[in-house]
Length: 205
Length: 205
Image (cartoon, rainbow over all chains, first blue to last red; front, side):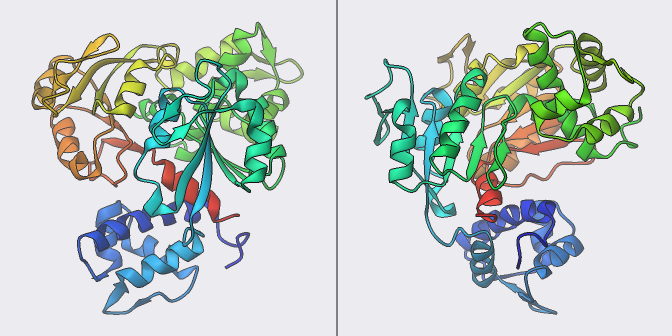
């Protein structure tokens, strides 16, 4: 179960499986098969079996997977069998939406800070948060031992904020700013840029 | 330049290159090298040269790439050398943010419809739009010949709305609902689910 041994493309599919299994569980399903799971996520049964078998023998020939057991295993592998505190940087419309999003807590994440550099936003309430001054990013994040941040600042500000986050000990950044970030080894970045995602599809139209 | 011949993983990197080149261009840069571009996007120069060479000889040994020329070529390859009309389904906080997002137009997209099924939202203004009744999705989207939609409805509603979008002729869906969608051959889906992106990183923490 060494992180270096499993291709990242497989790691990327595990949250998709976990999400589908959690929905099955909410509907009261106790068991599933790779065929059934495959129909839910649009991935072949063979691929699912191969992906999951990288981490152990979690299913049985004939009876398939016990849903709560597989959920438990995947949450352990993805390290979301705990709650991660998350900081949101940027209290614009997207930062608001993320800080109020109800879908994080049952998947291992809770927002505990929202930062902005705009004096007109600092001190204002966003849901249950008060917007903190971006000048306090390093102090607050280090103090709360936060390892994960979501970045919703303008592109022009994103690298400077990233440097602060890295300095504060953040190891995973979900970047909504439309720009590539430079981070040192050991800091992970995932990108969400709707225009990029759309362009990836228009190629095929 | 057949869509079937180039691996999708390469197609996925082209919007990243284009975005970086557009930022270079805004800063007045006329030429760049694969080394320089690579430093901006965090991808090796060799990989960039290999990716771009799939589509032709766009650079010169020694002098590198002409920025406006390469932008033009990439926009052509990704088919964003035109403006695509886009429908947003779901006028919640995220739908609002997307419909007002200023970053689409210079990358080939403009939102022209926002739909919601909530009677308290239908007819309300969202930026420059009036929220349309979701009951009119097929009629409006077919009438305007829209091929691209962004889906921000709750997970429980997402598949039913997707079926309507497909019926209306939509060929590309950017899905923010935290659920996998079933679509027929020839319809493309990209997924944005922040919890999935975060879980993909916690694996490595």
